[in-house]
Image (cartoon, rainbow, N blue to C red; front, side):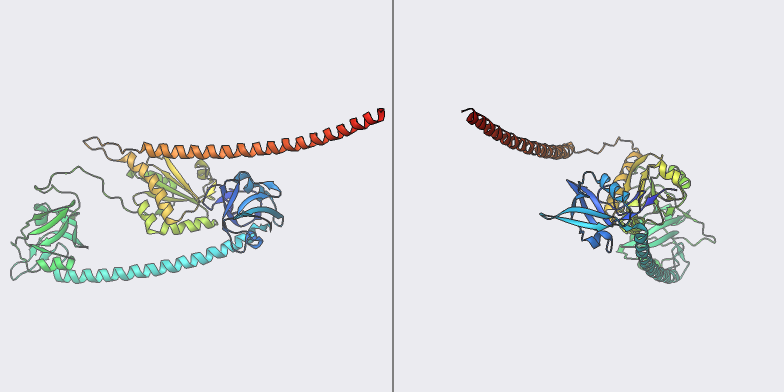
Length: 468
């Protein structure tokens, strides 16, 4: 079985994660690689590290009398120790250097504390979800009551008005919208369809009067009978124009609404066909079905590798629940994969640290990955950048060849120069340190040689005196 173990020691920068390990020791810190050591970015309350006095911002420069080099080596050394062993650390806090001794705890005890924290977080999340569901249900009921009232006043289905004679029939399905009403469907053969009204249009005015909501629209045509000509102000694609449908009598049977685009209005120039706006999708649990759906619909695929016992995975669930991340994932096929149940799939994607989010294009080609927990804003920015690659690859071709977006070579060169300068400075610092060490060694040898010369001079002086 895959041996993922939660250790609070991270093989990477910035993010807490879960790494494969063999030991059972528990220290209780989150670290990231830094110059001349590892930097403590988080200390778990009540952990061995917290009891020993470690604080966020401490720089661990040595442990067990050995200087800290790469972070991976430090992590492996700590994980190789056993619970109960003492770990001697030399840290730099500000300008001062201190020594701290921590007694490593047992991971099972840490797991119990993590489990309690998870249960509390889960209970809190359930309470929030329950309150959110109750609020949404109340809004839904209020909207339903509002629609029923509007239907009673204006016969919303097909939108027909009435007067002393025959009732007028327009033949559209509407939905209330800010600053007007949106057309969600057009009935075939209706007055609305004949004048070119189509699904997606927004009606913002009737008979030279602006309307603010659905009730206003229904009120404006309530007394319009068959034969009445309405002057509708319609907004489509950022442009406004007028349509003048002549109301008819309502047919005995109202057909289903037309949801395909009709011919454009004569005053409006024809536009190139574009793909409809992507809709939000829920998380799937079957990888094969998700991959097939992504290929069929030409959508990117986002895979969340997780485990039920992994605290950072639980934290990432809150990130997924944020509106910012939901908006970033809109239009992508999303699937969750439990690494304990699908080890072969996790190995295929080289999942060594969880949570691990992989982003693929519609053909299954990897676009990138996001490893470890990240807050909502940072995760949304990262996944949007990866999904942008897919959008660039699958952008529809137009008659006129689109000019590719210009890259900024100056900024790229500047970043490369800055990185090269940092490497040169680091190399120079290492060379200076080596030269100083060598100079100290030479000076020590010089002192020893001077002492030997003094001894030899004294011996020679004594020999010359004895000869005289």
